[in-house]
Image (cartoon, rainbow, N blue to C red; front, top):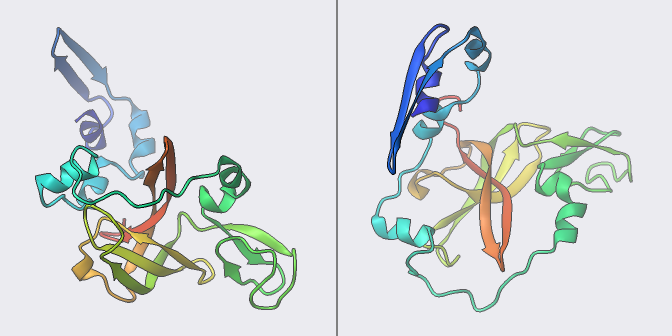
Amino acid sequence: MLAAALEVSKSGDRILMGGYGDGADAFVLKVTDRIEEFKHKIGLRARLDNRKAITSYEKYLALRNILETTPEAPFSIDSAATVLWRDRSWILGLHGSRCKECGLVTFPIQRVCFGCQSKDNIEEARLSDKEGKVFTFSLDYLAGTPDPPVVQTLLESSEGSARIYCMMTDVDPKTVKVDMDVKMTFRLIRKARGFFNYFWKCRPLRGGF
């Protein structure tokens, strides 16, 4: 609520923030002119407008691991912290490689260019803040998720037409189509033996965000 109030506030405004429960607290905050520095940033309202609502309480319980609706996978895929650290540029940073010879951008980072076959002549290209379009997709009803189907997507990034294979989130599967505008978002993929695995998914681009 405070974040939402700050989005529509202006310099000189005063905000009363109160909370109660096992006692009570109240704070009076004065908005300064520095609020204008953050007006251009993506705020709470834009994120709420781009969310996909959960359609049932059962799905909410399943997603929070309170209720099991699908059987557990017969095997567990462990994560390696050493691999995550070694490949952190493309796993966590979503960096691709741009060939210095022909300019081709590929993902994940490659030592050999797919276009001109030059070797070890690349520079990293950030793809996390780039928009893209759906090149092709499929609907996976057997992925073991409490909210099937999973939209498996091959998107084409606006950065050098690099293609990225990932899941799509915050979307009604019935609305997915080829050439759909998408944006990258960093999300939790799964938890394996206490290890939290984050990776990049794409989501529909709505209202320019």
